[in-house]
Image (cartoon, rainbow over all chains, first blue to last red; front, side, top):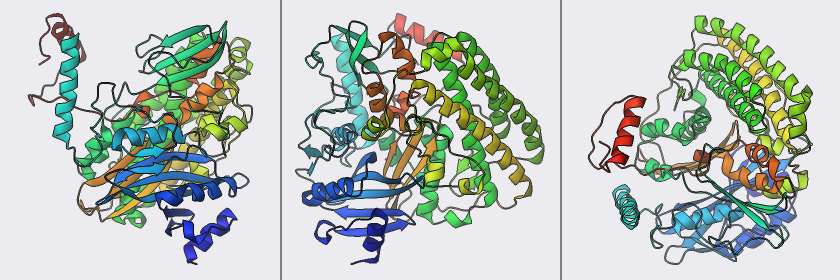
Length: 173
Length: 419
């Protein structure tokens, strides 16, 4: 068992199954990265929420890496008696680029609803079992196959698409 | 695990087919509405005079800032990041420079003096943001006198910010590695009596909100958010602290030198709109005494205010948070070894607070809607960051406000391009 995992378990006061975790990294004192894969994410989050009592989700970030997508759930373990928080970056690695899919963690956080939809909007990552996987921020007329935060779309291309939509709307009016 | 029946908002169907059973009237507000200065579309389902459920659609102020940041250097982004929000610009910049400091490995080279100046900027911003907010809240509650009083007194802190930074609302004092400008002793001495004067005025404002029946009755027991509901909807900042979640990042995960100052955490357990107001007023008083402490410390602290940071940032990633006036501001930066970020994520506080605020409205009177919606300090540039700029011709010009308005009217009237 790695030293970091032991430290995290002491803070959370639970035992984490080693099969579910790919790696635990310590960013700084009381700030951890927990890496896992899409098939194990749901079970691991279940332990963190139900046994350790984590209830605060700050945000969900998606990022495009060379061969895969990463999804980061930034959660906070809150110790109310000490007015202290332990930030944990719950990182889901190895999300396939051709068919990006990962389980929705909406069962544990109500807030995951719109943060996951934001990732879907910008990256096209599909969150399985999410009851309302639709756009959140991009305009209605935005083409469905364009996921603007992916690296394949540069600044100039997005500008053309935006101006195209604006032109189309002004012509229709 | 969250019960299945408890669902989040942001789920409105365009055809209105998702209206809750039992609602007999539906009110649509926005995106353009005289009540709200900022664009959002609220849908409020009513039964008689009571709200059954409220929902929201966002995305009318989408600027594409995260994508824009990937196309700019880390140094340029220092000036783009504060534009994420009009009022809490310093805290966005502070969180950003802390991400860069950490990734560039200069965290320990930043002098105490630079950190104190950063903190002064943050606290001054909290004061003017809160004073602005409770003025508008009083206006929404139909108590315009308080709006005029609080905004008049707010000018004191605005003058101090302008004196120290050169700007009223966008101080931009911070840079990776330290701060841009020093605060001289003369300026600090000039500011100290003003802070004392402002403290007396804010104490008077608190007295008005607590003792004046016409405003207190409008806020007390309105829109109660219980602690359990707050845990489910995960609000942050003053919205959470009013409902008994005592978490302030300055205390719960201290950054800069907040652990060296003497200040107390403000939180209430009532959960109504009055509690959110009092949290903010008490915080304003705390921030004022923190500002005084910082100015006292500045007299003795010495050191270079700016450490050198190389333009190329080594590969790495870092998440950090800061306590904005509205709540928890979280940034996540990924560097790839070049001078541009690989990915930069900003989540400003308002997006996390909308859900809790709409939850507050269930079962309340329609007349209380403005104060409840105001209670989380809405800021929609917080909610939909990002921009796409039209610079087809690349032409640049500098014009005044009136000329700008004239040009815009002409462009609209004769249907011709603006430039």
